[in-house]
Amino acid sequence: MEFSELIELRYSVRSYKADPVEDDKLHQVLEAARLAPTAANRQAIQFIVIHPAGQKAELGRIYKADWFVEAPLVICACGIPDQNWVRRDGKNYNDVDVAIAMDHLILAATDAGLGTCWIAGFDAAAAREVLDLPDDVEPIAFTPLGYPADQPGPKKRKPLSELVRYERW
Ligand SMILES: Cc1cc2nc3c(=O)[nH]c(=O)nc-3n(C[C@H](O)[C@H](O)[C@H](O)COP(=O)(O)O)c2cc1C
Image (cartoon, helix red, strand yellow):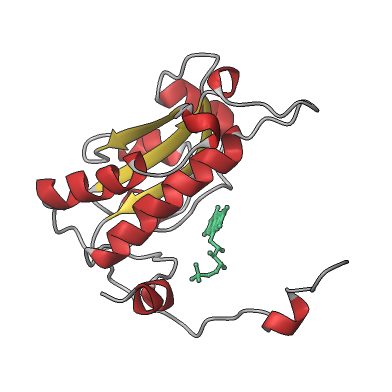
C-alpha cells in the first residue's frame, strides 16, 4: 500500500469484530514498533500484549468504553523514563519515543487491515494495578487491535494554512 493511502485509511476504530488476529500480523505490527527511532537509540519502551478474553471486567477498570475490550487484543505502550535520553535542559523525550513506536504499530496495523484507536484517556492507576507495572514504568497509551466493525467518518483536520508557518512564528 502507498504511504499516502495508508495515512488516509487509518482512523480511530471504536467497534471491533471478534475475529482473532493472526500471529504473523501481530508479529508484523510489533516489528514495526521495534524499528521505530528513539532518542539516542535508547529504546526505553515496552509493549504489553493483552488478551481481553476472560478478563474484560478487570480491563474495563482501565478504560470504560465497551469497545476497549471488544477486539481479541489490546496493546499497552509503556515508557521507562529513567532509561530515556534527556536533553541538557532536563526535557525527557520518553513520551515522544513511545508515541513514535506506537504510531509505527498503528500504521502497520492499518496496512495489515487491522483497526486501532489511540487511547490516552485511561485510568493510569488502574492500568498500573491490573498490569502489575513496576514503579519506573509509565503506561502512555493503549489501543485495541482487531478487525474493524465500523466505518470511518470524514477526516476533520485544520487546513495546512492554520498549521504551518514559514521561517518564524
Ligand atoms: C494521543 C492520543 C490520545 C487519544 N486518546 C483517545 C481516547 O482516550 N479515547 C478515544 O476514543 N480516542 C482517543 N484518541 C483518538 C482521537 O480522538 C482521534 O485520533 C482524532 O479524533 C482523529 O480521528 P481519527 O483518528 O479517526 O482520524 C486519541 C488520539 C491520540 C493521538
